[in-house]
Amino acid sequence: MRTGGGGKYRTGVLLGILLMSAPSVANMPVNIRGTVIIPPPCTINNNQTIQVDFGNEVMTTRIDGVNYKQAITYSLSCDIQKSNNLKMSIQGTAATFNSALLRTDKNGLGIALYHGAQPLNANTWFNYTYPSKPELYAVLVKQSGVTLTGGEFAASATLLIDYQ
Image (tube, rainbow, N blue to C red; front, side, top):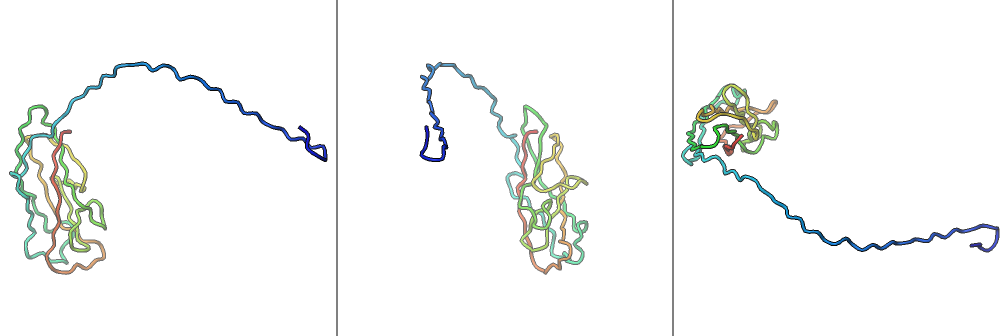
């Protein structure tokens, strides 16, 4: 098609749309199967809160991640028929200055966890075999460069058990 003046040409494009009919619907049965596994039938500490008491004589200047180590004392009873291979975790809010530690309500103070002599990061899992009961410990840790104030403190977490 020619436009007026200057001998320039403009090209037009014709779009075509091809319509096709949809194929007929086919019916194909789908079988889905699986196994639902219930949580391990374990009772931790007779369903009572586990208390760890660091006492009334904690000196802020002696908190170093070694002093004031306390055993986390608890009972564990499982009625397991399928597998004794379990895993455990202590889940809680991480300290703002170190995500491996549990947060306390006192700024600059956290709690390190141990499975035996091995450090245990909060919110991570470790494997064990029942009927052994993992030895757990809690240790106070002070944020580097912080001067702690005196007074009570608290922290909370949840002890979880699951199949490996």
